[in-house]
Amino acid sequence: MENVRLSRTTYQLIKRAVEALERIGRELERYNDRHERTAEEATDETNPDES
Image (cartoon, rainbow, N blue to C red):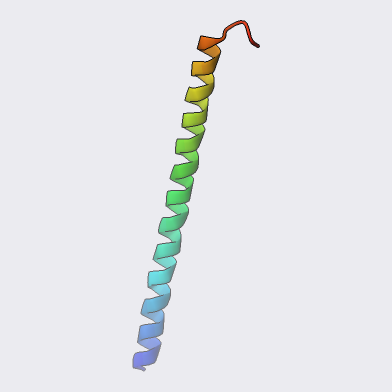
């Protein structure tokens, strides 16, 4: 019975870790998108004639 309890606990821990990594991945995508937009806007302001 202890093995079952340990397995369930291990599964829950892994599941939470995966969910946390997924959230981190989404936040990184949002950060990168914002960073790219900011870089594009800065480039557009620097070179307004190059469109």
